[in-house]
Length: 254
Image 1 (cartoon, one colour):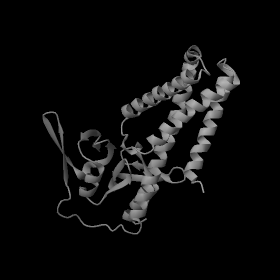
Image 2 (tube, one colour):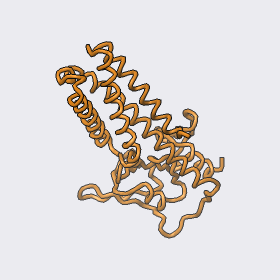
Image 3 (cartoon, rainbow, N blue to C red):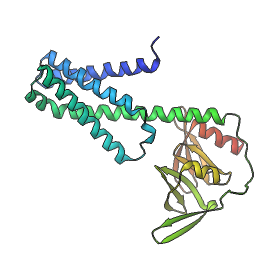
């Protein structure tokens, strides 16, 4: 029996091929057979790259890395189309060059949609795993040895000492984190996992990208089916996943 994931990718491929075929057949000047050939070749290459991308999407942390990957995907997919056209003589080189701008625009839009869906599915899977681990296992504990009361951040020749009580929230940024405190933002070389383990109990991991100081929360609003918005006392709004909200709810006893 075919897996749901496989069927999903096949459905995406068929929809993308149909969309590109319609575009090429209507506006490129190619005949129907050439449009079918280009649609199948280019979309298949993009789908295969998207499937590969899904295996390491969790390591893509910065917009710059996403831009580089998007550019690389377009280059590879167009190169595959060009090579296939050259070998089969179905589409001439001049015709390939003629449809290139149209292919690049369509391909970029297609990749943005695919990569966004892959990233969202990856986040949902990670949050589901986190929820499974945390289910019925959260017990607030008092501060013990190793729990931080202050966080130090080196900035050039300066070292900032930040009281944990003044930290509003922390946001992940690759191998770094941003610490938001008293209207200031500090970049620290650390991981969310490390800080989560060493900060006082009122700091809750509400999302894969956010740790919030629960004492700074003014109100909580549901946003969508399984996500929430946390409105902090100083006006900032951050998002919480379903599993993160559950942990926060248990800590606050609500």
